[in-house]
Amino acid sequence: MGRRRRRPARIGTRVHTVGEQFAIERPLLPEELFETGTWLTPRVDRFSQVTVRTNRYSVPVHLVGRQVRVHLHASDLVIYDGRVEAARHERLMAKSSARLDLNHYREALLRKPGALPGSTALEQARAAGKFTPVREELSGAAALVHHGRRWNSRCSPITSRSSCMTWPPVRCLPTTGPPTTPIR
Image (cartoon, rainbow, N blue to C red):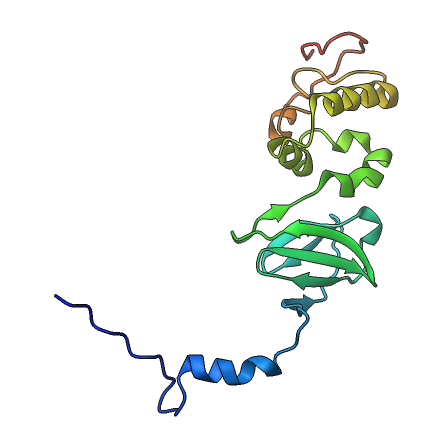
């Protein structure tokens, strides 16, 4: 069997084929690359996040309550505060997901260091391999400085938020050594 020869592609009843029309229009195209994407203007919520197409993306804490500009591309998005780039995230394809950067919450963690254990931003940083054992030790040292105690095995930065919410509340033992077991 012989192969059938493909006819040149035409749009509707136009005289020129697609290839011929492109050859005519090519000199008219701009030489420089141009940006593609959609501009949006969401407001930063109290959790330091913006919602873009049902997904949430973190921004630095000092932007809470402000309106920002988002340049949404096919694979990523850039968040601007005025003309300054505030954040850049890989775009989420699933609906109702969150992409949080732990560095965006540094200002808040200085005021509330107890918010770090079990936070979604911490879990995502660990999953991405960005929260190294050195940072883990530093967070334990910060807890010692701020609270006079280290994280224990029940309320450590390794556990999830739901496992730290026990009743009756778990007390952490003051210690300078390795993490201890909880006392009820």
